Length: 131
Image 1 (cartoon, rainbow, N blue to C red):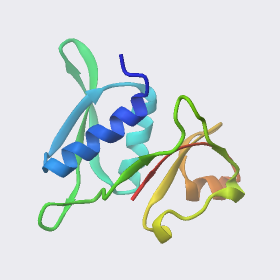
Image 2 (cartoon, rainbow, N blue to C red):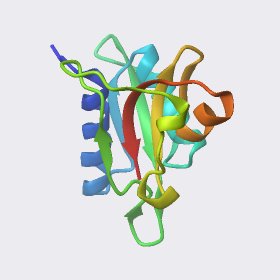
Image 3 (cartoon, one colour):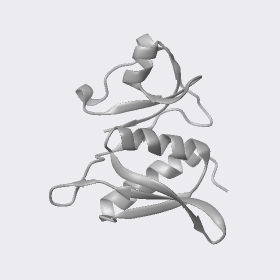
Image 4 (cartoon, one colour):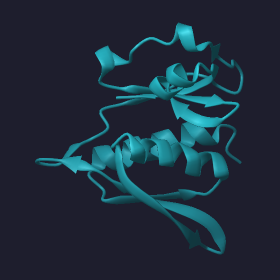
């Protein structure tokens, strides 16, 4: 049983990218699919698709590489954790790595990046940062 499925997703993607894998498979959920949608729209992954692994729903993520095996994802950091939730307002959001990365928030309108959150003037739970 995984206690923090979002952290598990981030670690699996980071490990696969460090090893140079083309794809990575992970257990499916609606939140994970939404998080992958945001990562795809920001250009960190090539795509994802639903799959089945051992009779259970899964997601297959296609990683994105630039040039000579350089991953589009340098690092990912989980901010809000099950034991210590972190909530921020739209005016409290700071640029990640000087604007090279994004923060992903869970808002009342769904998962969105820090820029979308500022435009919509919505705050929420700061799930993770990717750069």
